[in-house]
Image (cartoon, rainbow, N blue to C red):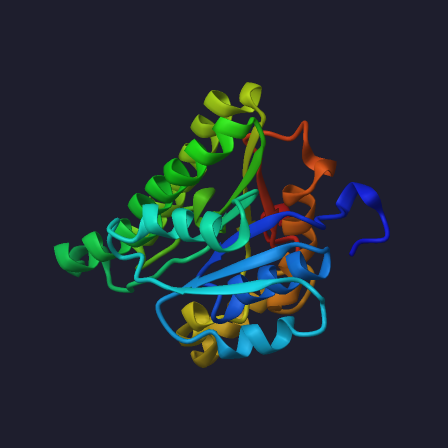
Length: 253
């Protein structure tokens, strides 16, 4: 439970997708630390995340689901409502990346990335949004990217998807803010995750990236937690449609 009631999430139910590792795991831990009950959603086992949530005294429920299609999305919301009593917070974190030069990029890779990162994000937001709108309250937090602001290289579908996430965040905020549902996004910078393993393994790219980050280091999953708790809490009740960079100063340079 948070010492500051503005950030206290006790009694709230948070659904976090892609919660098995990395940023999703970091967010789940932060929300539980603020008092939220957490529904962990992922396509692989989430034993490590579950073990790290022990000791917070909050409820944890796990849903195994592959978000590369829309098939499981309505069921995720229904199960969260059935098992934990509702959905107060949705964190759309699940995402994939496929790297290739634009001239060589395949339609299969394009569709895989867009389906997971953008299409499923929208339709899970829709399913959760229907539940939240019916009770007049809720928080949706999308995980955008620095590529919501920049072009990048060798990741055309990822850049398109994350630009789309920023746009959908603003659209949903415009439609739902007056109905009690806050929709915002976090744009992580360069974090130590599975998606950035190839970059960190490339000595030249790793050095170039570190040289551009004013903080002088890659982000750790725990670095994202404070922003997530803020956007999930009543402290952000008048914050709508924001894409908040958590990037060690990358965009400032």
